Image 1 (cartoon, rainbow, N blue to C red):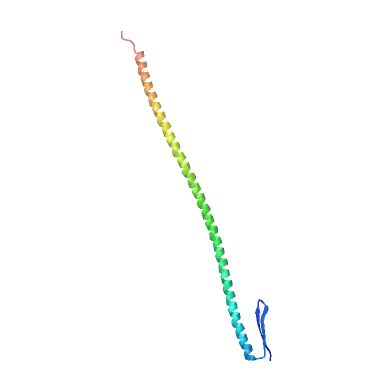
Image 2 (image 1 turned 180 degrees about the vertical axis):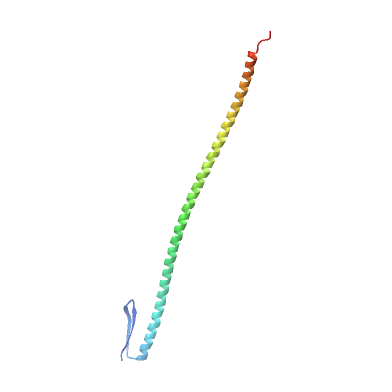
Length: 132
């Protein structure tokens, strides 16, 4: 009897042994099976690690996108806060300016009221009949 022991890799003959000894054929077959299992285990680990890496890359891309969106939102919020602060500063300056103008107007009004009172007194004195 002739025994053929074949080892395939990716559907191609990788190694073929021909023997006429039954025990040798079983030993070679057991060795091939052990080598196949070791190669398969390595391939499985590589494939699993590759899948895990691809999954991690997808998670990284998702998290990077989220981080980018959050950063953009934060930038917008900071810009808006800056605009609000600038607007508030402008409003405070406008209030100070209007208060100063109001104070000046009040002072001018008081001065004019005093002048009007003085003129009214003078007018009243001038219009009084002279004593006879």
